[in-house]
Length: 123
Image 1 (cartoon, rainbow, N blue to C red):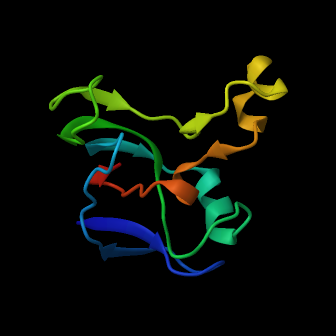
Image 2: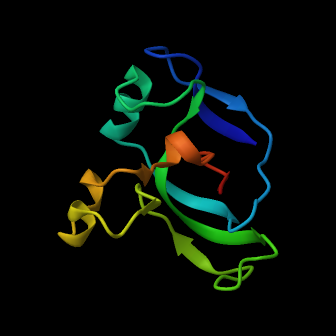
């Protein structure tokens, strides 16, 4: 499948073929119908957000579930879903309690913990 990839910090985006991911425990695979590409992706490209390269860009996708891990019970094949930039937070720290999840640590972001593939699929 095709993906927008940043091979190294501060390098040009490249549309390239990548292997299609398979859902691991607690994950679903989403066939993406639309995906955001915004200034967060510029920060990703410049290395302002910690994490390894290469990076696959695009976030906040909307699409349809096409594969489900065996332990997932709250979603089904064919469900239409969308995902947020922040995948999860602790829910207990001061920032979470104040409703400011963007400031919470630790938090899971797509580029650092999830393979987000634009435009065809994501986990």
